[in-house]
Length: 187
Length: 187
DNA sequence: AGTGCCATCTTGTCAATGGCAAGATAGGAT
DNA sequence: ATCCTATCTTGCCATTGACAAGATGGCACT
Image 1 (cartoon, rainbow over the protein chains, first blue to last red):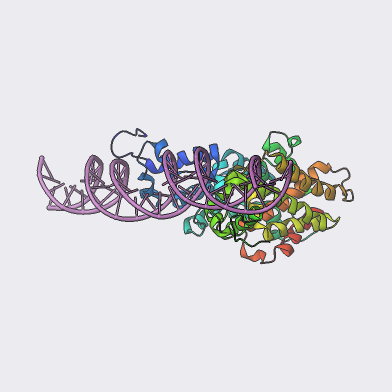
Image 2 (cartoon, rainbow over the protein chains, first blue to last red):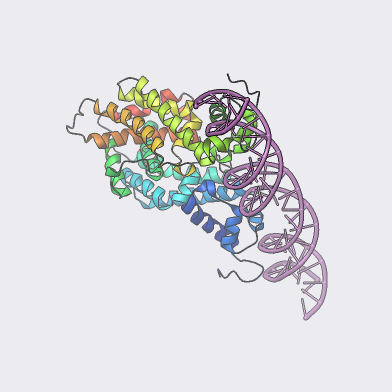
């Protein structure tokens, strides 16, 4: 199936995306090279162009894949907003390559309809979790604002974690550290 | 002073950094080209190497400049944590190029001592603002955790804003939108 | 089975880039 | 006046992204 023998690879598109995840995990998205991906997949340097057009095309496909993965992850985390938030951070750490591309629109075609659709799916799950929250003490909290605050704190923590900007005392377990920080929203 | 005539530019280092800010503002940090900066400054393609060594060296200098700018901005915002948070977001929007580089450690030498020092200066101001807060209702909030939550929500909002990921209904005034979201931490 | 079609992949090429080496220039120190 | 060193230049090479043209082979249709 994944045998690469023969003139036709058989599953080159997937192989290139996998290679991209691997390469980005090693050196970040800035250092990504299409020719390197082709070498990893064992094909000629121009093969990627047929499937993705250009570099931005490949990263666009990776972003779509990432937003779909994120939507699934959030759904699987259950109805609880805290759990969804922790899952968001966990996704960023476990699928670092996808995450690092998804929120860097200068790297790919963010206006691509497939990207927008996948992105909306993920955002919808997050909004659902916020809407499912019991009303806060103070009374009518704007759900739009609450969703924005939840998204911001979770996205910020994930980003800072990936950037290595957090102090060592935060520890090395992103899930636990995120849980503590997110809970701050409910106290 | 900034006259570029003659063999020696006179202020090439600053001119290159300024050009980098301009170029990143146009096309993002991924598309940055040293040769383009040299052209903008009116010097030969190898001139930047003398001042910064390589591309990472230039971006390292830009990150240092950015963290110092941020520290100053936060200081000028006053003692209030809310004001500091709004200033953080405002900095990200107004100095987008610096901000986009600062938190992308794969682009520069994040372990450079100058970077660490400047980064610590900015982080110190933020921690001070959190420490200056009156204790919360619930009693003893861990100031470390509170600082992390504040930094996360502010950084996340700024990042999402820059990525263009926020829905249109947030509006077009980052300061006002940030104020609303940050206040969520105090209710 | 035979035939033609077309997606897939290859080879070849070009301009642009980053980085290195060696040389030219100038402004200041002695 | 001379040297000296930081600054800038020219020249070069490997790598990359993108494009063009050709090779290959699976697949539909007869």
